[in-house]
Length: 303
Image (cartoon, rainbow, N blue to C red; front, top):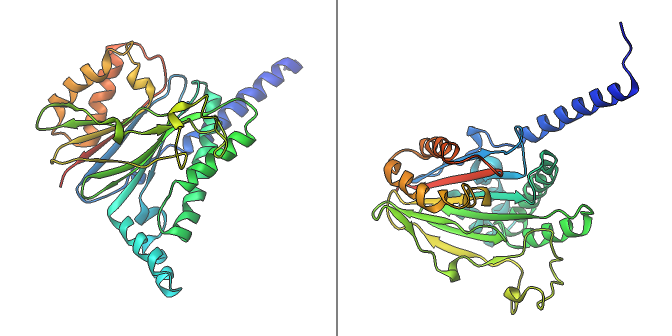
């Protein structure tokens, strides 16, 4: 047997470590069982990494009832006399959370930032529910500060986090992320969303939470806090809310979205969210070569 050279040994070790890293990163991808089950709301997601099986996009679902033992938390809050916390916890019975993030760049190793975000958000959510009975903007301010202070690799990410209710109301905040899109089943087209309902802030990790320079970022002038909460209402049964990364918006040099996607939704609007995602996958890959990671979450209101 011919002995491997030191260079060959290092290359083999690097490949093994990369495979191990990919395996760990894939573990963070949501399974079908992780998708929230909420009366009147049909949710499904699609993620297409540009290189390999992983990338810098991330989708994370929050089914409060399953992930956080909601009923036990409500009982504990009542038992300890925290009625305000218990009241807010009860509201989570009728809503689910969705987080979509996009790390700058699209290298496989950007999944490291994704893994950090995944764990930081879930751990922070645990304590937010303990203290406040709901997820607040504080968790994102703290996450932004920690990513800014601890990252020495000049990496940041855009992110949108929102909660959809059984009434069709979507409350969300955005950190430099593309705004949600709303497709009307009745009018067969995307509906305009007012600027006052899609206020966004800086990407996570770009600037400290308490010390941004208004001269460099005039859009933040007069803000009392870094992240503002927006609200959008899905008014009719069959309306579709889309959350997505910029890989969708820029696909085909911007020719796919909204035009081609609007035609696809008009043709398949009555399908379940999972099948709409599959049609979207096929259509997107047929339309143009992929240039970036692409992630989309379809939220269909079915009261």
